[in-house]
Length: 157
Image (tube, rainbow, N blue to C red; front, side):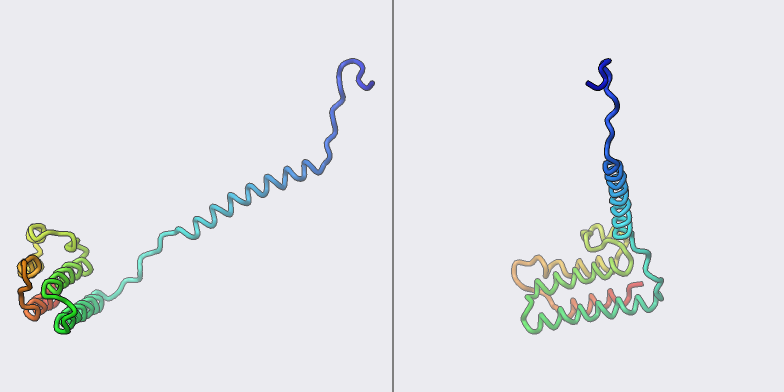
C-alpha cells in the first residue's frame, strides 16, 4: 500500500486540463472584449449634422409648409376634408412650423401658452381657427384660413 504512513502523494493531472482552463479564460476575456466593442460601436451617438446655411434652410422649411398648406386646401376643395378637419390641420401645421423653425414647442401649447410665450402671430392664427375647429356644425372659411397660415409662415423670422 503506497503511503503507508497515512499520507498520499500528490495526484498528477494531465496537461490537457491546464490547456483547457487557459483556453476557457481566453474565450471569456474575448467574449467580454467583443461585447464591449460591439455595443460601443453600435450605440455611439451620431455627431451633429454639418452646419447648413440658415437662409437656405429657412427657405426650404417655408417652401415645405407652403406645400403642406396647399395640400390641405386642395383636399378641402376635393371634399376629402371637412371644414373642421381642414382648420385642425392648418392649426397643426402652423404650430409645427414654429417648432421646426425655432425649436419652441408650439405644437403642445394651448392658446394661452402661445400668448404667454410671445408667439403673437401663431396665437392669432390659432385663435382664428378655434371657432371652426370646435363648432357644432361645419363653419369657417378655409381659403382665408389657409392665407392666414401662409402669412404666419411667410412672416416668421
